[in-house]
Amino acid sequence: MNKTIASLALALPLCFAPLTALQAKEMVCTGINLIDKLGQDDPASRKAIADAAGKLPYSKGLLWKVTKDGVAPSYLYGTMHMADPRIVELPENAQIAFDKSQTLTLEITEILDPQAMAQKAMGLMKYTAYLDGSSLESKMTKEQIALVKPKLASKAGIPWNVAQKMRPWVLMGLLTVPACEMARKQAGKPFLDLSLGQRAKAAGKKITALETIEGQMSIMAGLPEPMMVQAMVDMVNMEDKINDVFETMISLYIKGETGTIWAMMRYMGPNGIDITKESTGYSDFQKVVVDERNYTMADESAKIIDKGSAFIALGALHLPGEKGILNILAQRGYTITRQ
Image 1 (tube, rainbow, N blue to C red):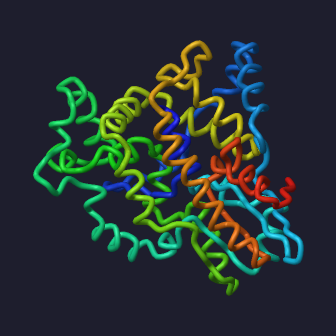
Image 2 (cartoon, helix red, strand yellow):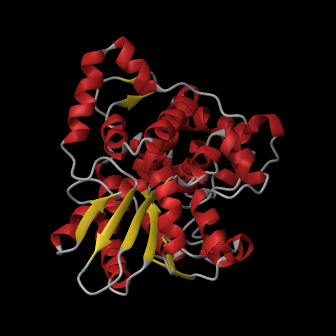
């Protein structure tokens, strides 16, 4: 289930706003690159992950040119939904593609007005809270409650009497976000997708969306609750490794190693990367949150690409793989070229 860490940051742009103010010093992230450490401690396992990543179509690269006869080229750019300055600063080739595109397409455009987005989310509480009188407590064991309850209070500032009325996918997301990233958002720092939207708006570009916030929330709410409860427990058990996991993902992301992120997360656990223990329980999450959305987003992307001159920004984990957007578009006759 630990693959949800990567999926939330690179595949689903729901922002879990912190409910308590954090000190400015917490904006400094700490963590080690687990892939580099694995290469030093266990070169054979590091090679196995690299080999697995290499088998995925379009496993390396963030910026891709998509062409079709008769229309101006468009670009797909993989994002990471964080405000880390290493991510928000576009590489030169992506900046050039962004500047010359007439349209920016995001996964959702609601992020461009956080206040309105928060108000809209309040009207969609059927996806985030129990409105039928049931509670999260009834869906958890005493041992799970004892583990999760204090962490929700200390990390997210959510007392248990409030938390038990919320659906587990929401709480899991709050537990997943590193403290430094929470602090950045509390300080008003835009994450990459939002930053792109702000730049496009300032430049007078047309801005469109592939999905809606309600659509994304309904997807998360539709995931099996026992699986998401276990995800909360996993997040708590991995607390000491969260910063390391995100530092590793950021380092791989900057290098465009999206396939390696997928391969790595198969073997991520409370003690780091263990190639002998493949994570289980995430197949439903990957199928619904990533694979099925890829086909829907590919359909919407194709409509935009057919008009030409678009810059389409979406979570980087939607790009690689047999069921990745790039492979889907290639199978439909589009020419895909890494930039």
